[in-house]
Length: 169
Image (cartoon, rainbow, N blue to C red):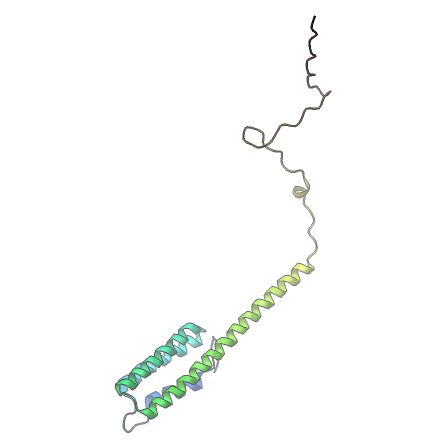
């Protein structure tokens, strides 16, 4: 079964939940501990189905810690511990594989978008200059501190001629 995040881990999760529930007889797993672990399994599957890989990984780590705590407290038999641990390893593997597939698909989509953009730019007609881009640049601002100098005066264009030197008598 596939979900929004592309995760196909439902069969493995069902095995994990069934191994937590037990099959009657002497309890191989404390019922309260089993309920806590089942809630955490639901958290992992919800995160994985939503494509929230970091939350799924954190949930798997929390499940491992809870399972170790149950073992240390004597709340789980050795056989049941092994079954749950194997199912949890399969879930972790499936989540990692789905994460890798999702990241590869995202990278491929980004690459395809970049290729489309490059192709569109390569086939676009060259832009024609507008009248604003061909006009002369704006005149420099005159005034103190503007960094511009007045244009040099050209002789014979209405500028006064320099005074003639006086003769000594």
